[in-house]
Amino acid sequence: MAGSTQKAPSPLLQRNFALLWAGRMVSVLGDLIFNTTLILWISTILARGQSWAPLAVSGTSIAATLPVLLLGSLAGVFVDRWNKRRTMVWMDGVRALLILLLFASLPFRFLTTWQLAIIYLVVCGLNICSQLFTPSSLVLFGDIVADDQWERASGIFQLITPLAAIIAPPIATFLFFTTGLFWALIFNALSFVVSLLTLLALALPARQDQEQRSQEQWSEQRSRLFKELLEGFQFFVRNTTLVTLLVVSVLIVAFDSIFGALGIFFVTQNLHTSATLYGYISSAAGVGAVLGALLAGLLGARIGSVRLLGFSTLATGVVIIIFAHTTSFPIALLLAFVIGLCMVATNVPIMPLMLQVTPRPLLGRVEAVLTPTMTLSALLAVAIAGWLDSGALASMHLVLAGLTFGPIDTIFSVAGVLTFLAGVYTLIALRRLPDKQSEETRVETEAAAREG
Image (cartoon, rainbow, N blue to C red; front, side):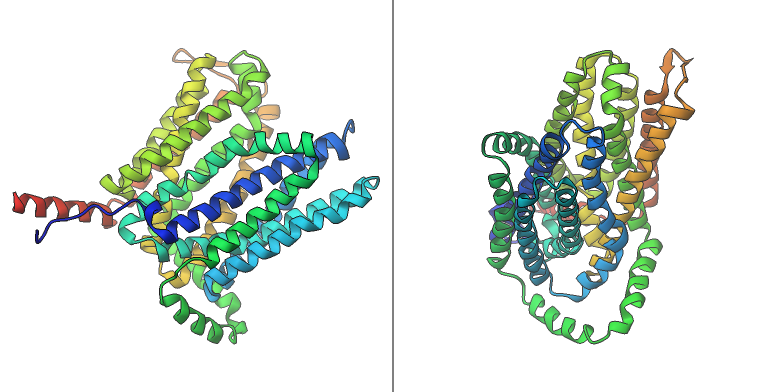
C-alpha cells in the first residue's frame, strides 16, 4: 500500500554490519584474554613474591595509556586522510605481529627486566595501532549502517564489551594455568587475523573508492598536518552537541575509574562484607550492561538519541547517589546491576549523535579529541579520589539528614551529583537539536493515521 511503512530488519541481519560486529567481538575478546594473561604472567611468574609486583602490573596500564595521551589527537588527522578499511586492515596485521613478538621474550625468562620491557613495548605498540583503528571503525560504522538504524546498531555494538568481559577472564585463566602462555597469546594474535578477514569481506559503498583518490591528493600536503589538527579541535569545541557528549562521557568514565580504584574498599568498609564478594558487584554491573545495550538501542529508536542520552544520564546520577549510601550487600548488588544498565544506555546514543552532527571528513579528528580527553579524565579522577580517600577526607564522618558521609560514599556521591547535573545540562543544551529518529517516528505515525 502506498504510504505504508515497513520496519527495517535488525542490523545484525545485514551482511556488512554482521561482519563488522563479529570481527570486533572476536578482537575485543582476544584483547581481554590478553590483558588478563598479562596480569597473571607478571604477578605469578615474572614478579612472583616481589614487593614491586603491583608496580610491575600497573606498568601495563601506563604503557597502554601513553599512546592515547600523546598520539590520540594526531592519529585522528591521519584517519581522516586515509582509506578507513585499509587502515584497519593494516592495524590488525601489525597487532597480530606484535603479539607474536612476545614469544621472543620467552628465552629471557631469567631476565625479568628484559621481559617486562618487551611486554611494555608491545602493549604500547598495540595501543598506538588502536588510536588509528578505533576512529576508522566509527567512520566505517557510519558508512555501512543506514542512518535510521544508528541507534539500534549502536546498542548491538555496545553488547560487545560486557559480553567479552564476562567470557574472557575465565577463558584466560583456564588457558594460562593449563597450557601456559602459548595458547593465550596465539588466541589474541588469531583474533586480529579474524578481524582482518572480516574487514576484507566487507562490501563497501562506492564513496570509499572516491575517498581513496582524494586521500592520495591529501597525502602530498604534509604541511597541513597541524592545520588539519587545529581544524578538528576548533570544530569540536564550537559544536554544542560534541561538547555535551564530552561532558557526559568524561563523568561516566570518571566514576567507572573511581569505582575500579575504590570499589574493593567500598565493599569492605561501607558494605561491611568480605572482599571475596567484590567480584560479584562487577559481575552484576556487567549483566546490567548487557541488558542495557539491548534495551537502549530499541528505546533510542523510539524516543530519539537526545532524550535517551539525557534521561539515562539523569538516572545514572541518581542511582550512583543511592548506591553510595547503601550498607546492604544485596541492595548494592541490585544497584550495581541498574548502574551498569544506565551507563550503557548513556553510551548507546553517543555514536549516533556524533555521526549526526559531524561531517564525515572530520570524524577521525572528532573521535581523537574525545578518547584522549576521556583517558586523561580517568587518570585524574583516580588520582584525586585516591588522594581524597587517603588524605583530605580520611577522617571524615558526618551525619546529614540521616545519611552518614564518610570518605568513599562522599566521593561517590559527588560523582553522582555531577552526573545528574550533566543529564540536566544535556536536556537543556540539546533541546533544539533536530532529532532524526523522533522526526521519522512522527512522520510514520502521521502516515499511519492518514491511512486509518
